[in-house]
Amino acid sequence: MSDQSYDLIVIGSGPAGQKGAICAAKLRKRVAMIDRTLMMGGVCVHTGTIPSKSVREAIFQLTGIAVRTFYGSNYRGKGEVSVHDLASRVTSIVSRETDVIRAQLKRNGVAIYQGTAQFVDPHTIEVQGETDKVTLRAENILIACGTRPARSADIPFDGKRIIDTDEFTCIGSLPREIIVVGAGVVGLEYASFMAAVGAEVTLIDQRPIILDFVDREIVDALAYHLRQMGTTFRLGEKVTSVGIDEKRDRVFAELESGKKVQGDMLLYAVGRQANGDLLRLEAAGLPVDPRGKIKVNENYQTDVPHIYAAGDVIGFPALASTSMEQGRLASCRMFGAPSEHMPELFPYGIYTIPEISTVGQTEEKLTAARVPYEVGISKFNELAKSMMLGDETGMLKLLFDRHTRKLLGVHILGQRATEIVHIGQAVMAYGGTIEYFRDTVFNYPTLAEAYKVAALDGLNKL
Image 1: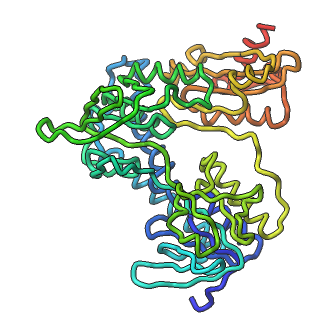
Image 2 (image 1 turned 30 degrees about the vertical axis):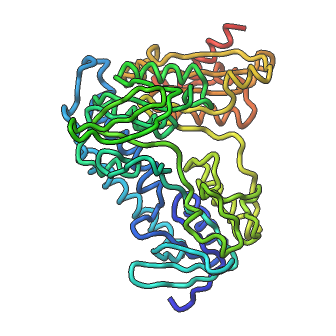
Image 3 (image 1 turned 180 degrees about the vertical axis):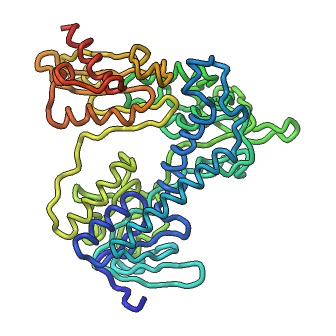
């Protein structure tokens, strides 16, 4: 391409980069996007969100876990689930999603460069492809380069027996016993996946409690369910060494308390490292953070005014959903297009088996703030739709102000929690009360009906 000067260069094609690039293109700006070969769609599509959720759905369908209520707890849909079963589904979905993203970018006139990006100066980016090098220049730059699994130098990763989450779909066979180090969102998701296919899971974390930002009752219910599926929790325990016992052909993790945990495989899922450290940021006049993160203001602007950043590389909340909006807003701000502020009210989706979704305040936060609240609960095993889905574990919990009836929080555990949470999110966004659920009509039978049941339960307590 002869003309290699642009209004905007976007580094990274994940959710933040895609939406930022397309927004700028809609504003009639000349846009270039840079990402590594075979990484169109970013970590979200290739190693993170899409693959892990695809694995979850494959496990759900292949194991028959959703219908064990009808056929008994020992029922196995396919029998032995293999890595090939999971990987083939992931490959198919990733390929289709990549094609969709490429088509969207092409349709909007975004020029795509494949290779690794590094700053030459604040306006110039060097792209090293597989065979050649290209230099691009732009008035504005959006950094949306995402993250990678954090690695410890003390962990002897080999890509087969001791792995990080990026390597999960490349393993040779599913383990019968697996050690998962890290009980954050990602660690819990993979622990539940493995438990669902019948593996014995040992979950280790040095924190004494898991998911401290989620309602305790919901977390306790998840932990109970995981224990029922064969998960052992080792919380408040620090891993001091990891290795392979060649004689016994076993992976082991030694803990600070003196315990020794063994298994066929170890999955290390302790945090993420932002990729900002790979961009030669000092050439752009930006400070380099040891964790690779980039600091921005409320407009997603860095310390260099024409350079913006969005998505996981800026840190919390590091969700694909929020990253999309951050990328779009960054483009709006840099080109002076009308835009709102980032919504403070957004849902979390935790794709464990069973899944969790939550929006708004927790009981713990309301108690600390001395807000007089009441609770309404609907148990999924009392809903006709849940019985059809075979979900005995689910529940929906509403928190509301005792005096004004205003909805303050929604917390859901169970099938399709991440889908139905948006009903509560919408009511909260418009300042609605719990009486809305009592007075409205829901399709029957549906999981959404849980809102009415929970609302009636809560109102009956007043």
